[in-house]
Image (tube, rainbow, N blue to C red; front, side):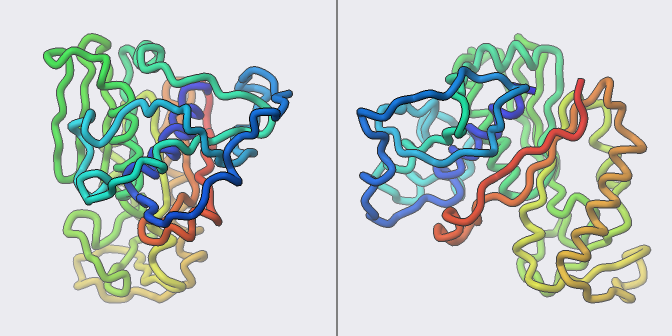
Length: 298
């Protein structure tokens, strides 16, 4: 349980490195830890610590575990440096749980925990950023000849050969099927979500040791979405406009039913992440935090 919780806390931190790239010059003194502050939190215990209960703090002493320039796997759209950002304040924010201390991330320990396993991130562009971030966290200690990256339009795989481990990403923006799964449709009003169908994509998610899902793009679809039951083969006719929350509920039920009917909890651990910071507006960072929910346990 520790590994995946730690992954998401760290990856949420690194969203500042790729997705949002805050550019304002607001003062940070009010979030710097005071030198006289007494730390009465206990050491990290995954059974006791609620990692979702905490706050972002600015810690200038943090040494980033990777940068835009040190990791070759960051897409340009996720790179602050490659997109012209000059300051580095955004690299020094960290998540601090209220009741415990998170141990420092150790890539060697993470890879040992993944030895002989497949870790698959499934979701949208924010999830792809999470995947790239985790790859960047561990790839630096792996010799060049003992790692590989194969990128695909839908399925991308990073392999740590020495550990016989893979860290993978599968593009499924709504988890259930939609007309924007392969040929991406930028206009949310033209997207049609097939809320009752998942098998065409999900057949590629089996045989995995750790599955990580997200649902961010649902919240970028407006107040109402076009939902469809049945096949797209009839010209995408017969859709119905639903409140996004209702369509989201139907889609997640389809996804949850697939998990319940297909995934063996004794072999596969499943995680789900709720809403995360927005791609486009830094203001939303004040409002939302990524929460990780473990659905099954080994």
